[in-house]
Image (cartoon, rainbow, N blue to C red; front, side, top):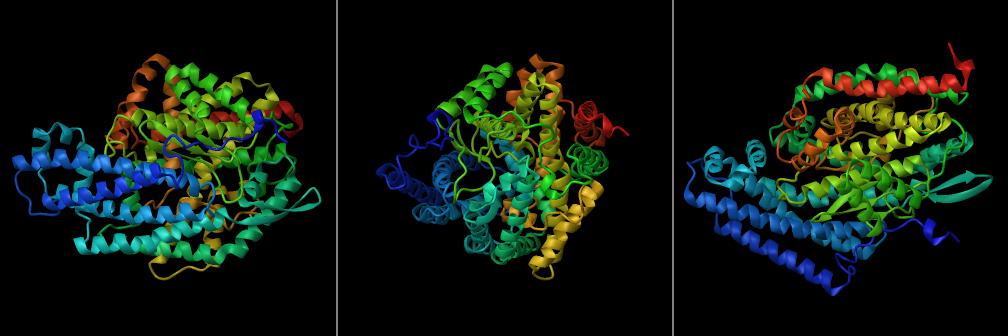
Length: 608
């Protein structure tokens, strides 16, 4: 039996509610429903809906101030309830009572979504300049007002918006739920060390980090076989979601789902194009890295299942306790506030780290209330497991800085949501590298570059795949075979000769949950934005730590208050310039050069 000290923790939410069947939870649920009822009555009484444009009246100012604060209060209650229920569903999708309460809550939050649409339409009819002149609350919500005026121009008639919201529960949201529940319960037959075992998909995918190539190959082959057998419902889910999104894009007068995604990401097309152009420019550098890694592993070419393979001798193992101590120590080199947040997260059991059947794969951080978050991970005792914890704790630190804001002010776009996580991950990475011997440095740089390759090269492949799916979905549904071919095409275009073209991953469209959110199309390029923006910020921190510290928390607190280019300008970055993105990618190129030097030092025969 594992020592208590080494057991992976599960998160604790007893301080929120004692349990799903507790009187406290029931009172909280009923209280939220009552608060929604009261908010509906306020909207009806004050006629919050689309109206003819007119000059601002004194009663409009009072109504705006009252409604925003009332809405904020209700949203806080429902966000806490949702996060609490999700804590059960995401760790055990077979938990029927939790699934039932989640469905019940979704029915109630649908009413809030409809109120949000009414608020958008009402704001669209207001003279927001006049409103901001007379309301301090309005001035503090300028971005929300301006963005909602644009959204208002893309609203369907009220009855159509109401119908779309209602149908979404049995449409896109239901397809999303199917994908999450179905894939989290998949068990995969795999042979390891001569023994056939049935493992959760998350554990099988973790074999990609094994130093044993046969284990990696067997895990990959078993995974592909499992996706092949499971593809029917997943194909239906993807077609259903992309079809629904396309229909709403057309009805609301947008040119494409990408235009909606860019708007919601708070960036414009010039910023996006500059970033993507520089990403494509860097593919040759990443292919060089992949060739170097293949040589270091004694291979002619990497197969897909070799991408995450460790380079060098067996790396140091990091237990969860060791990872926690190291993260707290390194966060303290930045500030006591950051290390205090991490210590609190570990001591108060904010983290669910144990892989187990029914639990979602991957990792995420969710805000639950005030300055509290909860983190899901599937921890493995290696550098990558520790790095993932540092990354997710960065999100928790971001949430800490957003705590004083209203819900409308803290609505951070995905492009800026990675800002603190990349910074914290890099902080830990640099500390490990500074203490490591050359062989461990080689291993860590291999991990870092594999991550960068995923965020730049693989993310581009995922973006191209999704763009093609949206374009073709206008005409008809796509078969699983077509989806696989589109995925392979995107991988060939981006990885090029860096990988064996005969051993790619045709089912990445089934693996990644990001494709299955009807409200978050193109949930891919923001990760690249976050990495490169975060690297640029970390470079500034190294250049002038004191100046950086004096502004960084304010930046994190302001990610919902301004467009991304405007926030970047505060740090002297021009996001519409390819020079910014190229400079951030230069940091990755430096790591590739360092990686190459370590490989040459370790294996001189690879020179030339």
